Image 1 (cartoon, rainbow, N blue to C red):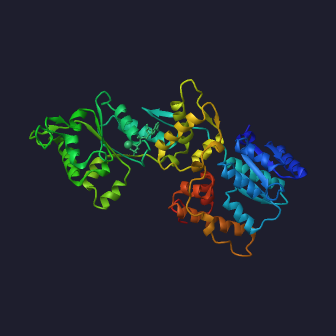
Image 2: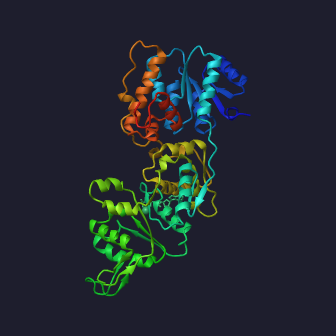
Image 3: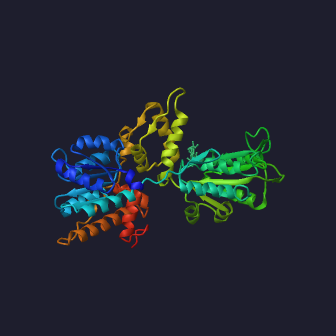
Length: 457
Ligand SMILES: Nc1ncnc2c1ncn2[C@@H]1O[C@H](COP(=O)(O)OP(=O)(O)OP(=O)(O)O)[C@@H](O)[C@H]1O
Ligand SMILES: [Mg+2]
């Protein structure tokens, strides 16, 4: 049995004879299709995640095809949709593309054409086998990019090489630094963390290297610093991009000589700790702007690991959301679970606060929906309809007049995609989000039009 046979198709139209004919056509090709005459009833079933593909006609007395799509998208439902119209006008083709329909057919519907289009859309949206969650120390992930990072950590952790971790806020840099330590031969030694942004600049030197009694006003007794405390373990310098220029020089000296001195103390101390650092800044840009020493940058960046933002890790969102929910659920309560449509809606959101934001959100869900199945419609508006920049379609030029329909549609599609890609600064995932389209679908369409990820042809 092929994958497409298990995917469920819903056909919506208010003419029973047409529904029967279309469903019979699809069923004769071993496709699992049913029909519904009422859009209202259909929407509630689709939103629940009952179908993998929806085919709707444009004109239905109770509610038109465009309105059906708007309501589905408004409820966070991303099911692929094929639209059938009586006669295709440029305007309806534009609107269909704007609403992100997967395909567009005009009547009379050729049976072989319908089946071919349905199979293509189903294949494009076939559920990928979910990645089995992997774990590394306290990190878990179901995303292939993270698997590659876990493998890299396992390779580099046992060495003494310095590691620089890059990633947006909340993407897991601290957890990754700890994982490196745990996978290293130093795992039994201390793991010492210093947040360079959290300690006032004038105290940071003594925090890092310690001080002798009387080194400065208030230094009533000797204090050992974090480098000393780390011993043969790992010292993790978080937010390294915030280090003052003066401390950058001192750190450079430590890295070059392997020695440091306590503030106000004469004796050199040997540093044996392995250094891992992290930043959410673009350090290379800081170097170019003259705010970060290039020589220090190269010494820190022996091995670099870049954590992708959560919105670019679709395999992680469902797994991490469920993982956090299970952690937060009150004792004795059943953890809530997600419908596939709800997971899809979470994937469409852009998670500016990354895993930390998801973690906080999961805590709310665990409390508010204990024991329930969370549907897309249960998710708050800020997740379903985050404020977007101006709608890309508003700035799309209309297709040239009197072109054959297919050419006009191609021209429109290309124009539309190019603008979305430009607006997203070449980021295809963001472009897909702006267009309200599935990422795979967006990418394939862009590729078909020869638009590279940089927005160049
Ligand atoms: N892959 C993961 N598995 C489980 N928990 C995770 C994962 N990634 C991050 N977390 C959790 O998400 C939260 C944020 O992660 P972390 O503090 O490591 O991010 P960060 O990149 O250091 O953030 P910041 O830049 O704000 O310091 C933490 O509570 C962490 O435990
Ligand atoms: Mg951190």
